[in-house]
Amino acid sequence: MAGNVNHEYHILEPDIWPLIGSISALTFTSGMVLFMNDMSSAHLVLGLGVAGLIATFFSWFSNIVKEAERGDHTPIVQLHMRYGMILFIASEVMFFVGWFWSWFDFSLFPSELSEVIGGQFPPKAIEAVMDPFSLPLLNTLILLCSGTTVTWAHHCLIHGDRDGLKKGLWLTILLGALFTAIQAYEYAHAPFAFGGNTYSSAFYMATGFHGFHVLVGTIFLIVCLVRTYKGHFTPRQHFGFEAAAWYWHFVDVVWLFLFVTVYVWGGWGAPIH
Image 1 (tube, helix red, strand yellow):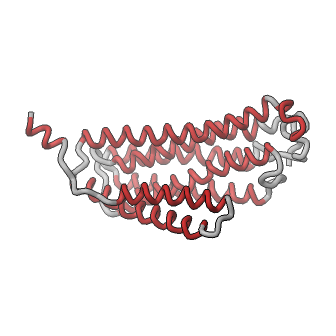
Image 2 (image 1 turned 90 degrees about the horizontal axis):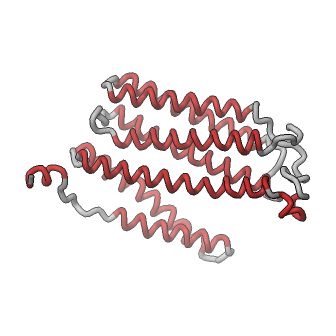
Image 3 (image 1 turned 60 degrees about the vertical axis):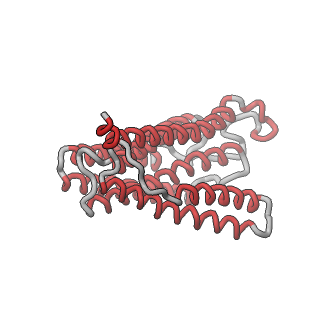
């Protein structure tokens, strides 16, 4: 039994980067507070925080990859990493719950904000909303297709098909980039600007943060693609890819909720741009 315990658990060399990452995150948030209050030292503090976070991303994640390739990620370690990823995605879910909560609050109870939005939703200041069955529907189909291609890539990885893995990742990354480009075009031609009323503010914050998550997920998949070309991942050990796939499916599901509640239901009855 002792031998099995030693096989499943062993001490790694101490890593300073988690501590640096925590300090950098605190520095970054402090810099944001200073920036919002127009303090003179805001840019310096904010810059140090961003630099520390970027350095942590490259160094700490690189060390984790090296640990995986050395065989340090035993089945028990992989299980605990999965728990960590599940908790991370759960925290992201609660992040979006806040935006959906505000959206439903504004739309279901417009009379409470009658002085601001005229007792209706979308507010009177919104002359037209986006056509949900134009670019938003196209982006929905793109993300659904990307969910299919990343699942195909995962299937190929499990069955040892490296060529299929590469093709699936390439297609998913290209679809993610296409989604981002279309959303940027949509923002550039939107009939309303950010801020000024509850509809536009909630719209851009919810869809914009989702777009940011698509960008992060695309980078995540690009890292997996580079690792694939380097010969990383095996059918038994591929947590890095699995985490990226989970994150991508989470992004897909959030978009489906956004499409239905924000684009279709949220602008129902309003003039179409």
